[in-house]
Length: 202
Image 1 (cartoon, rainbow, N blue to C red):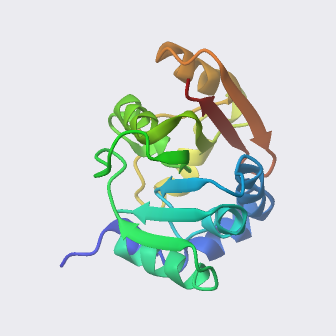
Image 2: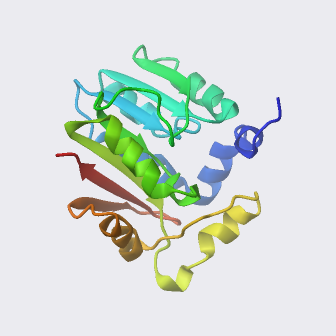
């Protein structure tokens, strides 16, 4: 079976993230975990190597960590091996094969900007979230308009195609344009900051 780009880079992904952006990379999971409660049944999409998963798992009742890359899932499985409440599963954020409203919290970290149909993905995340639950979407942003193009240029070396690029203002606009008016957004600082959007499902 042909390896995907993410399979190929899975072995060095954490290393490069920490070399360039350690403060943000290590702190984003901490920020996301602040939204998690002890009784929560959590779904994480695009979990990658498990950088967020390892912070969420100790806080929740159960975590289903998913990704399309087998290489990334292997890394996540190793990181989460010490937790007895984590299930690792291959799945697409665009088509989650589970019933409506089954998860208390749904997380999708640093993937929205890579998708052809990001709004469709958000609809799917909202679909599987329980009423009263939260959808949590951390995404790398540019610090200002003057730095536009920085993230794609950096990761363009690895042939990663960005479909969208955000600063803090345009990230808020992105959700408002989809009809999500009451989105809380906080920023995890770093060389490349991460904006953590939280949507409460009514």
